[in-house]
Length: 112
Ligand code: HEC
Image 1 (cartoon, helix red, strand yellow):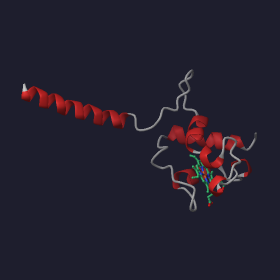
Image 2 (spheres, protein in one colour):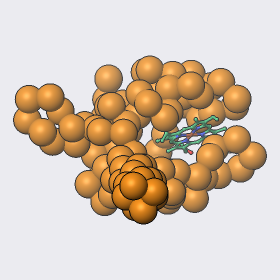
Image 3 (cartoon, protein in one colour):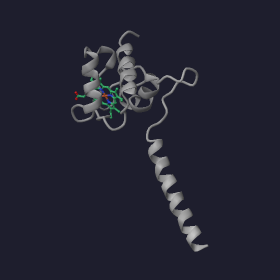
């Protein structure tokens, strides 16, 4: 019985551990199409400084509606961070599709 209990215990620890890794990031999929949504990622990580519309400058954040960066420069800033208050998201937004959709959404904030 003791042996059974301890191997069950080990199994439990292992499955919790694996569970932690398999849901390392929130789910950004659209409820209907299943596609990654750039606006979901933006609203989750970025609005606290850049605001919902992209034009807040909380903590000195740049106005994204007036940005003139090219898409690949936007991605560089997101991945590396910049200056004192723009964090690096390299370890949080890891999937290429997530990065692409987020950049696409940032570019679109300029037109609205
Ligand atoms: C803690 C506040 C904060 C958060 C959260 C934040 N930013 Fe920033 N962001 C800044 C600041 C401050 C700057 C200006 C950095 C500098 O050059 O000093 C900036 C600059 C930028 C720029 C450069 C714009 C330009 O034209 O120069 C981009 C792009 C950007 N942020 C995108 C994002 C995205 C996308 C997210 C979410 C994944 C995000 N930021 C989250 C504070 C923040």
